[in-house]
Length: 245
Image 1 (tube, rainbow, N blue to C red):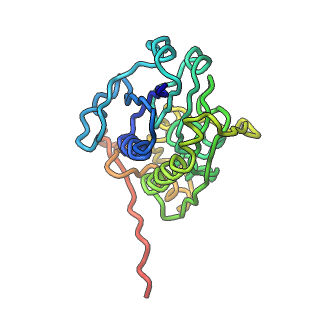
Image 2 (image 1 turned 90 degrees about the horizontal axis):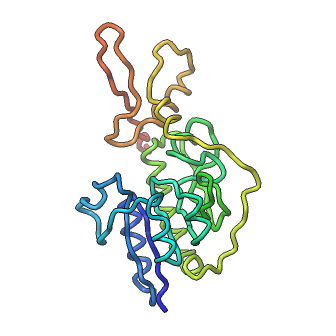
Image 3 (image 1 turned 135 degrees about the horizontal axis):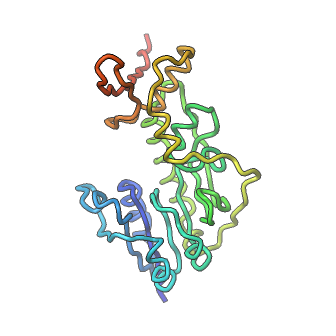
């Protein structure tokens, strides 16, 4: 009998990479899906699979009935307790659990110095909290921004999937509980970071770390409000390593 797998993803690159990794597997019935509130995912010109919208909180009964395994690839939805209690759920997470669980782990690792990396773990009722199947750390250099750190992590996630996918599908891996609870950052914590306090006293080093943590390609994150005009001004930083002489 085919093993029925649901992929829930809001990351096009990881979805494409996953579809290539499972191409050599037999007897798999895979459904690709994305978050119901992220229609741009299905419309991406780079997406190489057919995907359908899913609302895991509302559709958990159907998911439990239809699938043997659910894999989250940067899914933005929190899986309900009823779902994770009744079907095996695995998450590919862009952070080194249990540090900086939750939103944008690389941003907070730049700021607080906690370990960064990629983790594949079982999903339980808490955010990025379940038993660890595999993980690996990356080094965030002083010239990394949020984007360059994230790109390193994403490549590491693909490597971990390649190395562990067979055991994940078969359920033969040995998961280990984290030794501590770690810490969690929510979306509101990131949103609170975005507003620059122009009166805050800090070192230049801390200011650079803040700006590189908030710089993520074309995204507008850090900003200040001009006190004279009320204009909102977005701020990014460019870091470039000097060429060797």
